[in-house]
Image (tube, rainbow, N blue to C red; front, side, top):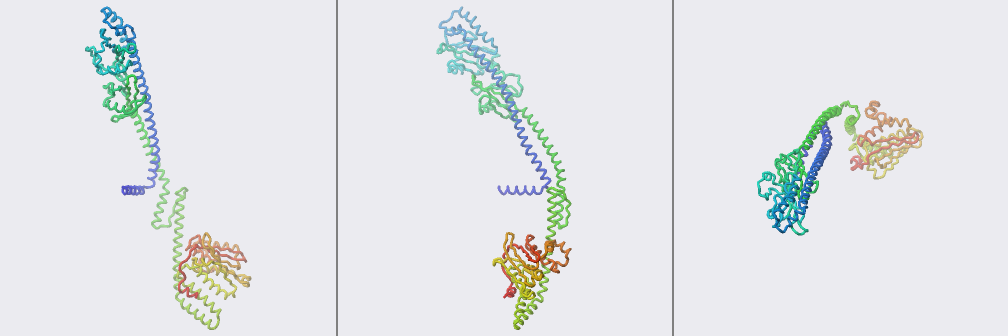
Length: 637
């Protein structure tokens, strides 16, 4: 699995790397615009949807509560009718009678009291029946109001009514048989009704009978069975037994499983004002419910959300279409703007391609500011530095070849010169000319050191021995007026230096230091010190000779730090060593140091006219391993 992900990531990276920066920027802009638009639209339409649901909920909650108020009004009417049915003392006396009434008494009761009961029913046209059931065997049935209780003892609700002990029992009676056993087509078609069943007690402990008040279900729950509907919602009733009552023939319930709806409703809380959503097919619905405590039932209002959701989707699609058009327009505009912005970058890219093909003299025509202009500037500087490094490498290689040729040329007669000097030394010793013998020894050592180049790097110790030989020879010329003092710790004698790099500094000290009478009379002292600083190894060559004027010192500094092209144009062949009095030797030493160690290293000259001159050489702190060759070591034995 990890290998597959790694390969997919690699392929994606390769594909991304092949895409141009212009396309990447356009994609980035699209993503930057698309993400906030997507988040905003998601939030906006989610809020819009929630607000629509809440508005629909409030509207239909109001309708639901209005219908509940109508139902409670029907309950109140039926309860009042039930109370009035036995409010007449004559009715109660008739039910409690312990003897059979005479014919005239029955006629009188039927004419007056029974008629009042029937008028009570007719005064409320929504009430279907008002009936009194009694178990008193002494009285006669007076249809359609007073019946014997034996007619209802087999009904399912009879025991429930008795269990209520004188409180109201409400029930929805479906397909209830007519106790009068007569044909009535109206009754057959509307046989489901809501019944109030209330046990009649005398003096709170004597069962007298049961009173019943009925109302057709389509009159009791008018909204649930009304043929006039808006087509977007419909009500239904779920009783305490889980039975569902509604107009099942309504087009609203087409394709809807009411039993499944009931189970979904039962799975949710049934508190007042509770609601939930469900989906049938692709149509969302909202279901609200409120309890009718007297009936032990719940009134449900099922609302179709198809129209509001369709409107939301239509608005969403328009928004998406507008966003797509806007992004496409911005992409086109961005493409042309980026073409103008990246034009200079393309020029820079083409210039880099030319450099890659070997053309290092490319002219980059970009002078504008900004990041691209800065990049072009640095690229030009890089080309300039690259050309300088190439010239430096070529010069270095040429200098190396020239040194090799000179060394080869010098080696042709080196052994002849060494042997000649050795013979002269032996002759001087035989003649007891020890001064000449010592001078020849120093000269031979100098010749071996300068002509034998096994490496361009030597120890500071080796260079100092060579300087001592040089001073010994120069003392013959200046009658021992030169004194060399060294202050170099033993550990620093292993410091790496360039071969023959200190002799030009000492030569300058001798040559220019002896130019005044004081120096020729009193002599010149040359100090060589070495110390370690945070920048590197600092070697100091100082003399108390003639010194240099400030103007001459400035000219010398300028000559030492001058660029090669300008120096060669100005001084020509002097760079090869002619006219060393003009600072050419110091410049050559500086150039060698920078070539091998870097531009941060080199020499610096300090001087006070008539007092002293100090040359500071800064080198990296490097301890050289190895040592001189065998020939060089034999020279110093």
